[in-house]
Length: 228
Image 1 (cartoon, rainbow, N blue to C red):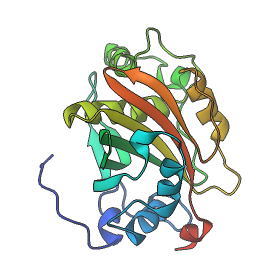
Image 2: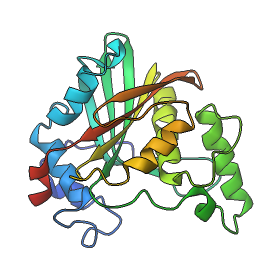
Image 3: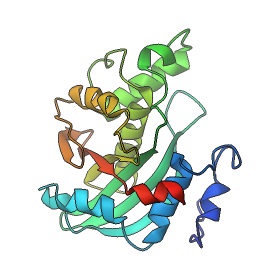
Image 4: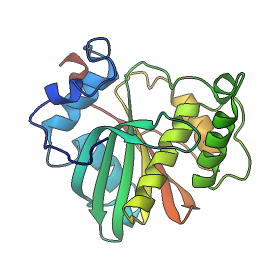
């Protein structure tokens, strides 16, 4: 993939980046909803994201300056050809250094297969990839089989990009637009792996992982973006 990026001029440019621009670009679904939310304040974080970061009580995540945000940002992972496709990846600057932020957008869509499902009839490449992800997340063993694989590789991508850009901090954010907070229990179970407590609209610290301070957050986006 080329490393030249052109500034966005609107949500239509987000659509063309999708694997299936027609199927995945639907009102009320995550790709379109997230695009409208992030484009509304294209030179800053969406207000829902900024509120969670600023109210986190974590000095390194407060009053961040958004340096860039890249839709559908692929992060290569060892053990296979497919990257971790971040819905948005952002690089920000705070008072304690750079911050890498991997964003997973959700409305009602699930987090994909569990680790058990993903590992069924697993080729050696998958096992190598999972070992690589665990290394990045500072996990000595594979997580429990009910954990969602998508959350694992999205968190790893935040750490990998932090290392690549010499950022001291990494954040994996779920940006949910579900009024019922669907799939929050999966997120909660994922944070249990790191000994973290999960709550909506909050950020939890997972300590230092692979030399980077890692955080997890759940953001509740505004309902109006689902209808755009």
